[in-house]
Each structure stands twice: as C-alpha cells, then as structure tokens.
Length: 216
Length: 215
Image (cartoon, rainbow over all chains, first blue to last red):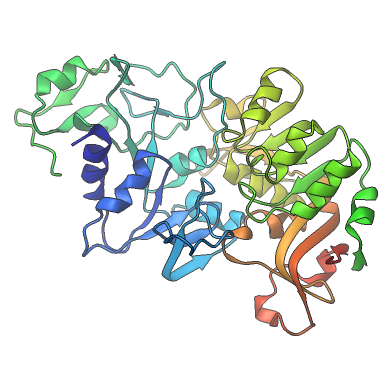
C-alpha cells in the first residue's frame, strides 16, 4: 500500500454517520473513496455545495457543477447548493463537523502551516484559514517527511494557517494527536516501530507504553 | 434595470476601474463581459474575485491580456500567469482568506462597515489590522470591500431582471450583485416574468442596473 492510500484509509475511520465533512485537495479527496458502505456523510465543497458526489461518468459532465478545485463532480440525492457567504458561514460557524486538509508543517502543539512557502509557492490560502479556524475537528493528511526531513517540528518555519491547533495528523507512519497541547503518538502504521516514528519526527512525542497499530 | 448590448455595457467601464467579478475557477463567471473587456482593451483594472481561474478561462483572460494591475483574491495557485505577474511586480496581489473575502463583500452590500472574524488571528493576515475582543475571544476587524462595477453571471433572468442561479455557479455572484455602484449581469437564459417563482429569485430585480442582451 502506498503512503497516500494508508493515510486516506486511516482517516476514513474518523468519519461518522451524518457528519458534514469538508475534504481538501489531494490526499484528503481520496478519503471519500474509502468510506465504509454503512457510513453516510455529507461532503461539502466550499464553492457552494453539500452532497458532493463522485466524478461523473464520461459524457455526463455538467460544467456548472464542480468541486473547489474546479473539477466536475456530481451531486448526490439530497444535495443542496448555496452562495459563498453561506458556505463560509457553515465553516466559520462551527457547522462543519470535520475537515481534512493537507499540510506542509505541524508544530509540537498542533499549529499548522499549509498555505505558502515564501519566495517559492504563494498560491493563496483559499478556504484553508477559515476551515482550520472554524471546523469542529481538523485532521491533517500528510506524508511524515519531505525529502527525508521531518514535517512535524518543534516550531513551524513556514507561515501559520491559524492560531487554532489541529486535532490529528495522519501520516503513512503514524497517527499523532495533541491532547493538552502536546504532540502525542496514538498509533503506528503496520510494520512501523515507535522508534522509527520518533526518528522521523523533530517534535518530542509523548506516548503510552503500548501503542496500537493503525486500523486500515 | 436597462437592457444593453455587451459593447455598451463594457464601454461605460473606464480604465482603472475596480471590478468585482463573480465565478469560482471560471464557473459562473460572466465570460461575455470578460471577452469584451479584452476586446476593448480596458487597462489598469483592479479585480476583486475569489480567484483568477486558469490562463485562457474567465478572469484568466484578463490576466493573459495584461489588463489587471491589482488583484484581491483568496487563491491564485492554479494560474501560473497571475503568479508570474505578481513575482515580476507587474500586478499587485492581496491574498484574503476566502470566508473573509466574501464577508467583506457582503458587508459592503449590506451597509456594514466591516465584520469581525477569528480567521487570520495569529497569522500574517492579522498584520496592520485592529483586534477586538468579545466575550474573551479575539477577532480581526475586516473592513467592507466595494467596487465600481459588479460583473455577475446568473442562469436565468426574467424581463425585469430578477435572477436565479444553478449549482455551483452561484458562488460569489449574488453577494457581489449588492456590493458595487453599478451591477451588470450576463445570463444563460432570459425568460418571461413569472417563470422564476418568487421563492426562487435569489437576486431581486432592483439590484440589477444592466442586463446584457443575448446575441
């Protein structure tokens, strides 16, 4: 299983029946693929849709129905559409139960940097700052390291996305939470030892004696 | 509401104007007005929009033609030409969180001086802004954002100018329709009065100044 699949499959276990969920672009989008059949959630696209469905079959594209990346999607039965003020009212107002976003760096207290690399990549924050600030639960889906360097750091060197700490990081190596503002190792991926996670993480990790294996 | 030809709708926009342009990655953008802005070569424009789409599409066409000197947007990451013009200093870009951008536009249209939001606290977005504490929680004061013209696209307009939208093509359009001195609208279909039921009108006719005729 590749890193993206491990991350997406693990995060799919966090979705509960009836939740309103916003998935970011990239690995987060894959989470929908691994949703258990008996779990029904509402996916929000922040461009104005609740009830986002899969990519349409060939020949069935409706150009005025896209996700937040501008790609054609479908709308499931029971979907609703609305303007951007409503969409971000849902996000900031705490009505979105869970958001899953990509990450560049996460610090030891759970603060996230995921929207720019000064001088290199300045795409704009889009909806990320509102989502991290306003969603009830925030999960970051990211590879544990970039070019062999840790991405879970003592302190982020890149500009932060929000002053609100995230709830969980899921990587291909581990699940890390931030109870009481401390990076805490909660699970390891199959075949990965606690020592390997610690070695690939700059932030000091708290952990219990027995770390369970990630359910996939 | 007056019905105008697209050439006349754009002729009244001066060089240097501030334009709000609806659409999200080009979906729901007033393409005919954008094409005509390019044809007439309106220069030195300030564009307030969610994004600048991609080269060759929607607002991306204005960027390609070098007509935009200032952009206020939440995301430009999918348009490398916007990024290039920003990095070479040809275009100034203000990046605003998407929820803050739409609320600043909404505030202008609703007669509010601004809004208070927790988004941006503790980030570079808070630089130079007033922080206000309410019930122990910090918020940024984000001021209202208005424009000379709102260029809006809807799915249906009736002969009076009542508008309705479809699917994800609504996005910034109805909010911008309230926030500019002049609101100019292109639509996919013009229909008789009454076909859009009162409960389905999203932008009421009195908000529309100019409806661009079909053809």
